[in-house]
Image (tube, helix red, strand yellow):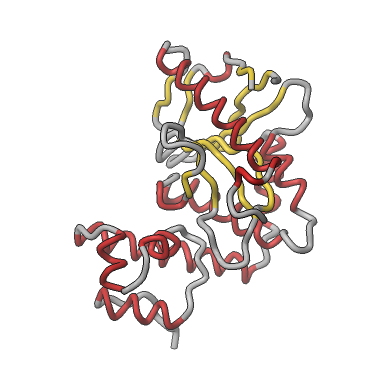
Length: 161
Length: 89
């Protein structure tokens, strides 16, 4: 368990993109994902596809359900992107809070049938499931509110994940 | 600008033009299919039945990064009765 905060990455008219930063770490979870695969000869193109898809969602459509594959449990908002495509095993895990608000976590190469079979990927999903649970509590208590593309009050919250 | 956004922008800008073009086309086709289904009140399952494929396949087409083959696009176009692509002359 470690403390984490939610940081805003980008805001557009259509959408707000956020990520997680664990206490004392120099990189956010999304940065770790990008840094890990940006110079990987095999996965570089898959990373570009994911980042360009996010950019399209930010600038054009918002984070519509159809762009995501829902992972985790029925009761949570954990999702993976992209939808499965041929020869692409790179997955980025995230919390889709609405059509306009997305929190991206970390991800990796899915070379098992399900994410649960991979200790690494399962860990990323569990982190997001914990965050989702704590965020829902914070939403219910009025400490944070999802308003259009923003998460109001999120800058004052720390989450033990 | 924060360091995550800076890295994100740098990597999007450094995307090879052919990869960027592929995502642009795939995203546009996904939008087009989704828009037609919505306009006609068709679910993905109903469209899958019309196409003779699975709902999971239609879901992938609408996911914004599918690498469509010409035969798939031709079948989608003829099933929906609307062009999916226009070829520049």
